[in-house]
Image (tube, rainbow, N blue to C red; front, side, top):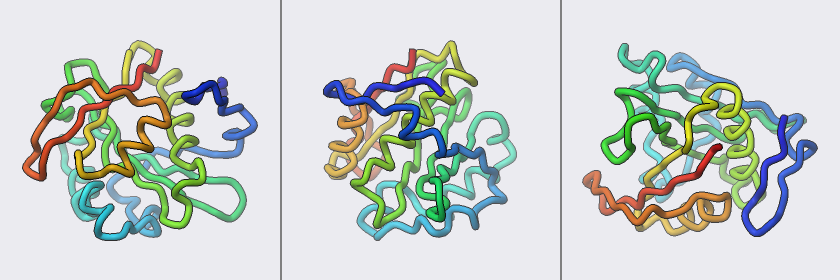
Length: 179
């Protein structure tokens, strides 16, 4: 596992994430992430688990849309969850060849404790192994979701200046170089 850098010169060391795991999950694995139910004000932005797993169970999702559970060491179990989309499943704001991040959630009670940073560090390692030619990871975040905007900036995402409206208000398009 390589060392990733946090913004502002802080490092996420191998020791910080050595015992953490990123596990691919399928549409049949919903029970693994049920414990990451979010308060309504956060679920509004992340999407409900019904929506997320409905998409993961669609036949055309195979190979193009993948869920991941983030497993913490000790007895904490699943502490994070997100979905990656690529190819024909990528959203209209993501250019061809891009991998996009969706439905990112950290278990309530563990938010603000570096779990999101560890999730992204694990994702960077996954990119290095599984998508070494992918230059960037992109996401869209609702302009009203100020907590998520601050968190994404803190873990190295940069606002591209592009905006997208998905019906729930303007979405800021962020990018994180992965090379």
